[in-house]
Picture 1 (cartoon, each protein chain N blue to C red):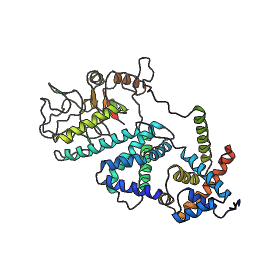
Picture 2: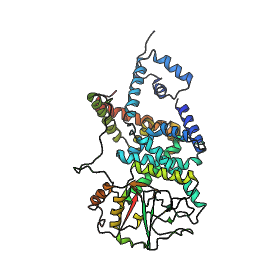
Picture 3: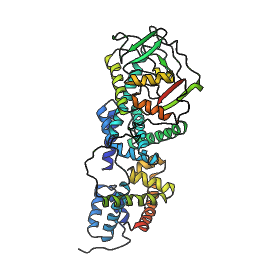
Picture 4: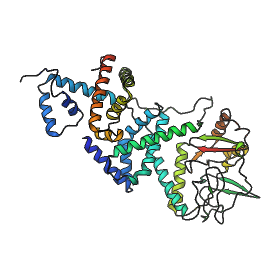
Length: 198
Length: 258
């Protein structure tokens, strides 16, 4: 199934490169969740910055589509764009001082309107359990070495294949698999110690 | 059927590959058959699924409006590229930044004449063939093409008299920009474009413009960004005065769009 999805992305990218706007939007739909989460991690969890960075990424993607030939995996190509965009943003943030205009209400408070949202959220208990589990996982990830953390995130959070990870990290697939194995075992041990997970 | 409980089952690693969809069909069927009889491997499968799901669950869904804002940004970029290509046919050299006034209305002082120009149109309401005045990133005037009035009365102020404000355009402003680009590109006409007055406007002029006009185009790294100005801008500028030195005392205010 992974192979089929990757083939679909490559085909969409090639169609988008030849001017098919519908294909480009499908490409955005197919990748935006992954891109946004990568942006979120690059921005230290700041949702606003992550949204801006996501826009930058897709603008860069659009600009560079003409050069995509489908010889490498689209995912790998997209990863490089994300990396470059995040690095550019980091450089700009260091240079500029930004002041945001917000609309003030009469009482001087931030005037953003609260929207009525249909309540389809999980129950408070379910949400708390989910956030505790997520927090446990993030704490455990932080305890891994950088190499192990990076490869776990690429594989299990960003969804890259072993082959794509091999291209991204410029290491052979055997090394990817053995590093993944060790990272996985280490993380599973940390999680089991932490909260009885597994 | 006998079931197995071998903690060191030889198929354990294959179960993980199976869980992740990495096995060829034939190998996958072999593992499926093995799972029917091996409790240890069933537990390995269950644990690994939970592991993968727990990591994936740390990802968050995208904000509701993000997809639309991405598509809008890309469309604006697409139109910008087309506009720049169109502009190149009419004027040389074309510097990196071209300012487009899309506002109702924009007031330009030119000696004794005041040109009160509605958005997209020439002073008399007809389309015109002059090309935009071109400004580089530092606010210097480029070479105007024949027929375009120059802003001789506006000298570019020394840098130490500027107050710099970087703002983020609203979604409505971005839509207005899109509309402007579409007009220029799709109409096939080249409209007279003026430098945004805010680039060299005095602080008082900025406040006057903000009070009277629906939108102002500002010099931008992201060409042609528009933001809506109204009383909120005045309030924001007043508020920013506390954070941005010189905004009240500045001779000129340069507003750049992030």
